[in-house]
Structure formats: C-alpha cells, structure tokens
Image (cartoon, rainbow, N blue to C red; front, side, top):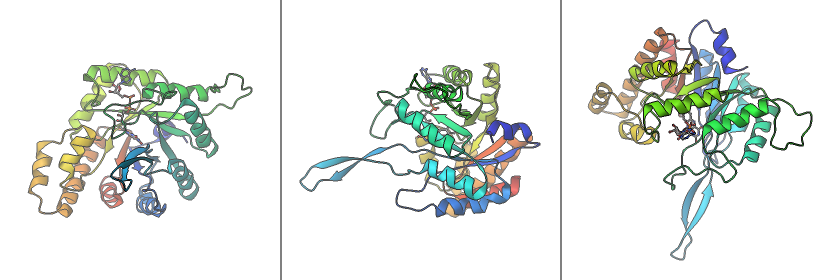
Length: 317
Ligand code: FAD
C-alpha cells in the first residue's frame, strides 16, 4: 500500500522507521532484530536507505596506493523483499541519482515493481566522499527532480526505449527529501523551497524531512512550504542522540544545528549511557509536541539503535 494511502486512512499520527542495510559481509539478522523490537508499535512503513559506491585506497605493497571501488552497504532491494515477506509490511526503498544511469534506474525500478514495492523515496545522493561536489553519472540525473520525472514516466507506462509496446504502468508513490534548516548547497531557504516545490510539481506526493532537534525549525519549514504552494504531507524525521561524539558528528555530516539546551545537557553527561537517556527524553518531548500539532507520521532514523526508538515509541504511541 502507498504511504499516502496509509496517511489518508489514519485516525491518528502514524509510526514509521528508517533502516540501514548491514555492512557487506554481515547477515540480515540485525535488520530482523530491529524489526522484532519495533513491530509491537505497528510501523505503517519501513524505509530502507541506499548506499552508493565509495573509493578506498589500499597499499599495493610497492610504495603505491591502489584505488578500489567498494559498496559497503548493498542489499536495499533484497531487504525490502525480505521485510514484506516476513512482516507483511510496506517498504520504502530509497533510490538515488548518484552512480546510476537512466537505464540502471529503469532496471532497478523494474526489480522493485516485480517484488511488489509500492513506494520509493527519491533522492539525489551525496557527493562521493573523495569528491567535493556531486557528479552525476554521464547518462544519469543531476537532481532528484529529474529522477522523480523518470519514476512518474514509468508510472505512465513510458520506458526509455520508445519502441516498447503494451508496457506495464508501475504505480510507485513517490516521496522526496526536505530540509527544515536548508540543504547545505542551497544559496538560501527560498531557492531550496522552490526546488522542493519543483519535485512536488514533477509528481512527488509527500516529503520526509532531514532530522532536526528544535521543532520550531520544522514548524517554520511547514509554514514556508505551505506559503510556497506545497500542499503534500510533510513527515518529520527524528533521530535520538546516542553519544557525546554526535554533538560534532551530526552537525558536520547533516548540516543542522543542535539547540543549546540540548548541547549543555549532553556536555554535562558523565557517560554515553547518560547521553542516550538524554537523547531519548529529548526525542520524546519533540515527538509529543509534533503529535499534538497533528503531524501525519513520526518517522525515526533508527541507525541500528532499535532500543532508543523502542523506548521513544513506548512513551509516545
Ligand atoms: P535535490 O532535491 O536534487 O537537491 C540537492 C540540492 O540541489 C539542493 O541544494 C537543492 O536546493 C538544489 N537543487 C535542486 N534542484 C535544482 C535545480 N534544478 N537547479 C539548481 N539547484 C537545484 N542519501 C543517500 O545516498 N542514500 C539515502 O538512502 C538517503 N536517504 C535520505 C533520506 C532523507 C529523509 C534525507 C533528508 C536525505 C537522505 N539522503 C540519502 C541524503 C541526500 O541524498 C542528500 O541530502 C543530498 O545531498 C540531496 O538529496 P536531495 O534528494 O534532497 O537532492
């Protein structure tokens, strides 16, 4: 079932989660363990992230370094198929522009359609770590809006090969990302929201936000989106803090701010276990306020930390 149908049918705020595929070489049990801890809260859908290739340099033994291309977390499509089979749950695989030609994308969408996936979260993807800026595949998409258009074309039965006859129409419900504190590359908030509106105009039906720790950022973002004519559901994404190191890692990696009250609480904590408790309490406060404001879904970035999400869901749902 589509995410938008879940939202339409819901009588109260829904619960959903995001999972990361395990590192290559690991099995799928960690995913099942996370699900087993969270199924009691009846997630409406489960997102599974997509991780593109990275470059690593290995010592070639002769004083030289060899460049290798590795994908550390493959398995997005397989995990979606396994989850819907085992838990009878709707999955939302993430699909990205980076590293994909249009043909690769078309074939990936065919796989997703064949395994019964009804939803995709469409993203551009970040630059490869060793590259300063995002470089699309020579025959790929430069922005998420172009990938939205390709998915929509397949929903209308239009494939890349114009000679194909009697094609099947896919029925993907398309979600896209939004940034309450602005995407880090955007020159200003207004242009970022114009680009977000272009994704909705191209066919996206809902937005999931980047994580934020101050609900005021979300409420302001929703107001600005509505003023810009974006009328689709805007799902807040939340991630409980779990370690002191995240005070620096999260702003660095996700380009967001942490409120000073939270920073001071974490600074005073004696251990990461205490930070985890602070993170859970903070996230419960955020969740309750967002729920009271009538958000359609509370979406949690579990990042392999099911216990924190479980404690939050227990207090909120
Ligand atoms: P876009 O919408 O393409 O925007 C990227 C930048 O370009 C923005 O600054 C925007 O304002 C600007 N822009 C957009 N269109 C135009 C245009 N036509 N002309 C000029 N500028 C334009 N990454 C992964 O690799 N895998 C994942 O699974 C993943 N999941 C995510 C889930 C969520 C909920 C979020 C919020 C992010 C996720 N990301 C993931 C990270 C995401 O790929 C990065 O944030 C990326 O840098 C931007 O992706 P986007 O889809 O928002 O890009």
